[in-house]
Image 1 (cartoon, rainbow, N blue to C red):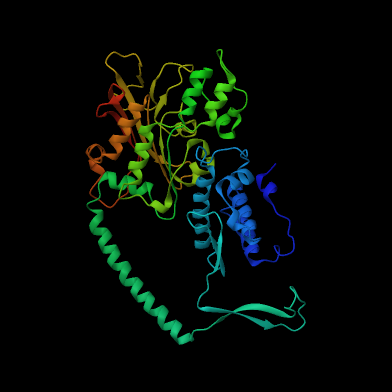
Image 2 (cartoon, rainbow, N blue to C red):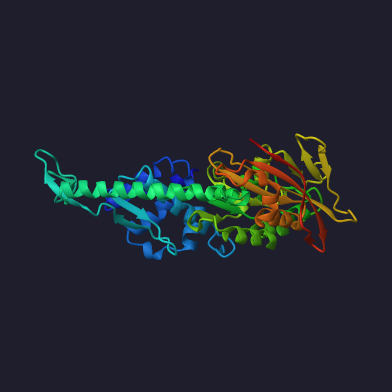
Length: 439
């Protein structure tokens, strides 16, 4: 059953004719919401409760049960699905009123720290008046033969002069800003360009740590979880084990949301970069991703395919492909298009006495071509950490891609294969083995 069908509310008295409810109906029918069932259901539910005067009762657990089908005893501290979708809903509402809903006379937003929507009029210089319309039937009691219209309260000459002044000021600001941007563009480093292209105004950036629970699950069941099963949630059903296992233990592990400290440290470091835009940035757990996110958002993903099945959706676009499933063949990195003296395969041996490791960094377009994604992964936590340090330190990436700094052009997409040495769970400074830059 469509989740929106479950949340659809019958137009009862006091709700169907409410302008707030009509606004919400227009929003969920818009292009930004019509294909996002969860966000639409979220907005419909919290709006209905608010319109009915119950907004003060809204909380994370209540929404989790009503909208996301969580059990009554679920713990919001271990499952942030409501918080993550609330962040997305706030951003999507903002986009609606910037685009399709730019002419709406009424606006709705959800303040941070609350789940109760706030409705407010947007046309402050206009006055809402009622005008008699001969022959028009009443639509609501006490309003027979009337229609609502907006009446401009300011003198036309005042508006014209104000608009002319704004145009002049805007032109001056634009000219000064353009000159300043041109001066700074000559000093842009590859690192600055990279993060500026991953954090952009008007587009959400998702930072996705790995789902380490899947690694434990694989150790218990004997096999990895493919993307089709992971994305649909079917992996939570009775597990198919390739060796003796305890289904109850596996189910317990699946309910947990483990990730590594190195992934979290990477995520926190990225959010503190000067280029980061806090109000457009969200740390999202891998199992809460949707395919739509990979098409519409900028993404920063950490960890291999074993701990993030979404890598399978991206690996087809990559040249350096990390193979970390021992049941599928030898461990290593495939180089699909070797250049010069590069190898077509770089083997990884977890029992190597010299503790040599491999990691990759990929900066590519997202699946919809509307943004960018950055993938940082390794065969071990230490390998992923080394790749993360390489891409965030600034100096290592700038030294490798120095030819693409010092000008106003965008940083081209690229992939890097790194070699590391791991000692007691920590990796030494990563060294580039091979790299490809794409036009």
